[in-house]
Amino acid sequence: MNKRILILIAVLLAYCLLGGKATVRYKALSFDNPGTKRVLKTEAGNYFYYRSLPEKSMILNTAGISKLELRSFSKEALRKPEIITIIAKKRQAYTLKPVQTIKTYTVYETINIDLPPDTKSIEVLCYSRSIYMRAFHVLPPKAPKISKLKNLVIKAHGGAMSLLHNGSSSDYYSLLPSQALKFSLNNKRNAVVYVRPRLLDLSTPKLGVYANGELVDTIVFSKKRSTKYHVQGIINLGISKKIVLPNNSGSSDYELRAISDHLFIAKPVLVKQN
Image 1 (cartoon, rainbow, N blue to C red):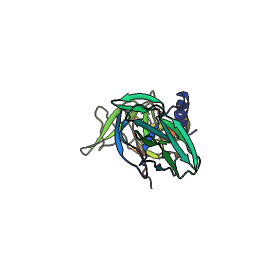
Image 2: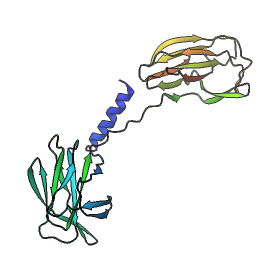
Image 3: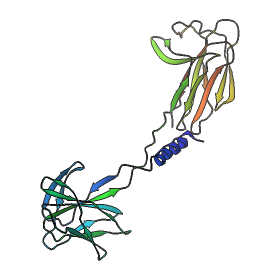
């Protein structure tokens, strides 16, 4: 199975194990015809709240909104505070319950309203001149963010080193019969690998190339030595070979194993995408 799909499944499972909890996000809405305003400062933010003009309702544009919260406060303690909503000419009265006092303001419990499909607007009506209101759109939760896998990930090697040539250097990884070079390619990226053997005797260097655990190629190297390329502490480097790896359709694991008793240095390089 594609590793990206496995990661997505893992993220969704973790989301379910946590009880599907997600941070609820809100967007403050504006009335089309607000009256006077007052600011309410809370831990959730500082917002202007509005009261309607005398004996008038206030209009909210709710196109594309399925759920909102109506929050309110009053300048003074009231005996029976009430807010009325009018949706498609249907009135619904809500009795307000005090939850806290901020300075001289009485803050009421939030009213949660589920809107019928395709509700273009609603009216909010309050006869008390002491109550101020603000509506908030309950935004849908964000989908879990999936981190993109790196295109090339080195998983195992015998040591990193620099290959020197004419004053420049390039990073390589060593591999031995006891330690293979292992790496993965992701996001449908392909790569080639530049490999050089270390020559110590007359035996022929041989290397096995594996893709997803299967041997796909055996590379036989020349016994000819290089005079232009050097690695500090390593003598008698052989001539390089460019190995074209099998096509990667999504995410694949690759491995270079020394078949002969030689040390090799290798450098995977991503192929540029068109």
